[in-house]
Length: 438
Image (cartoon, rainbow, N blue to C red; front, side, top):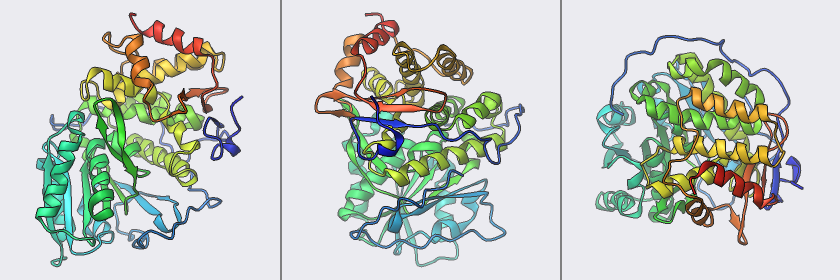
């Protein structure tokens, strides 16, 4: 039997995530449907005070400061990790507020890591924000190729090359400007360069804003599996300027919604119900709907990370659909499917398996399919994914322990899940055969 929520941190082989107490989401905007604004074609659950993770072996961080009354910051979500706590700033136009970035820069040297898509849009603005009325700071940049297929060791070396050629020292700050790939790679580079330098996250995709920029997971892919090489390394702050979503392609926006849906399914039923009513507003980029979805997602993730920073149990539940989804990304070649597209199909497969086990009723399974279809996301894996391909890739998943594949599955009412290796293998086989040609 899966363990209770209170024992998640101690039980990695079989853990559960209980539903939060039912209540209406705070600050949720009313359902709305508005025309999509013009855009470029180029691409609180407060942190629990009950658990504060302390470490004697970390550099001190700049104190969290609240924005001024004139600030554009609409929300500050704190990630409570003791001496390594940091704020998530959320609001429109935050890149026009130099103080938000500058207060978290250590030393006089900054390296901005970005890609060929984002650099023409925001690199100049970020450089201005880092140096405005701050002549003592110098900014270097490294522009990487764009795409999941470049999230590898060869590309990562370009960051180290630039840092070493620029003679950066341990007082420097790395800034990740881009989506999840850039954030993961910049964070990993910061963790490894000179055995650790400060870094800041400026996520520019919905996927990165609601998930990957928060919590300190960094790393690169290996040909045999996704995110198998990396480190837990927390940023100084996360700055989410929601205006950057105006240049995000529709496909990338939908990809991010897959991670938003996840939070509702695993731990926040009222949030999922809000999503069902507001999915059209999200797809239409209605500002208040997007702002609330980002805020609520960050609140959920911050609470989980504060309790289980290094994924000993509870944090693993944030990977609903990821074991199937990562197999799709690896099996089809990195970048063929966007991360959120693979996670959407993986979430449907996890819900299907949960239903086959008798852990959720048919209505929940159907609601999972319906909302992801409305978000214009795939609900089945590509035809090239066979049963054998799924099994071989899933066998090296990070959640395998002592040869046992542990999965995040839905169990009980909406908003409840388990992280467990104790399930009938027949249900997994039935799900794989139901979704694969052979």
